[in-house]
Length: 454
Image (cartoon, rainbow, N blue to C red; front, side):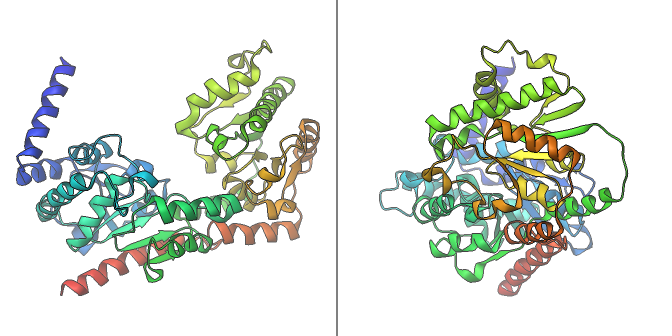
């Protein structure tokens, strides 16, 4: 019955779009859009915001990494969000569903773009539909998280033309963390993405801006680097945590190298390295039941990582990881909360290492000799700053460093000063004022648009 109802709904939705019943669809979407309150709850929005607050509509809200939640918590805006599937459901009445992300062979700026007709029809539809929707619910700006998302960019471009500025608050950063990644991202922005048609872009680090500007993706006056709002709360809690004396079990956090890194590193070297590293932490947990080992892969890649990487590492060892009570494998745990209750962090090629380092945790980078080569050297993150961390060249050295740091966790003051400088360079200001800057800039962009309308 559910399958039949779903088919009937999809048919009705298709009929509404094909017949260009913009008003009916705008009414439906005005009911679907929800207001995100400062306490995290969702409610039905009114037509206008109270207290003359500006209203933000969030696109692809699930893709943000808590930064939007920090902005919502300020209570400076009325924040609305459209469920992702309702946004994509509309867009893919025009585009084929395989066209979800821009890439070199599907860049609308290229003369041979194969979805020219579909794009023209979609934007003509959005022009009327969004105009009617924004009359039903007053929207002052739209915000999205990634330049690759097709649905966001078309919605944002049309909104901007209607006087509702699109602000891209990028979730991805660290472009300058390695020479290889920097070059790769410059190529992607130069060839893989159509030029930005929104109003403004906010990035994390000043080091990221050249990727956007030099590629011609955006004009220099339309982009700012403001750090990360989610770091404000983390830094505040870290200071509070430092004054609390708490007896707890020792905890080591391992951030596994992701399967997607196979596209960055030489696979013949990566797989043995990954197996050796994963097996080490499983065996360490068995040998030390008094210490918790937390393996935290990326949430979206958890099952694949378990199936392909972790199982491969323990294959033939007669180890049942479900019978190791102090081995915790979770992708959904909040990484900042985890760091605040941990003793050591170990990982490679993730900005989370800088976050652990700035609060004074021992950070171990397992850059094993057998894995090292000239090709990999330019692909590992922050290699110019390896002297700020403990570097393990093999599993024996890794165990020695872990054992030492469990008893000697203090980081030298000079090293900590340089760690702080590194964090501020790549991530966010230690003052914890990124959220405040984001709020001010969003208001400024909306104010400028209001002046143009007048």
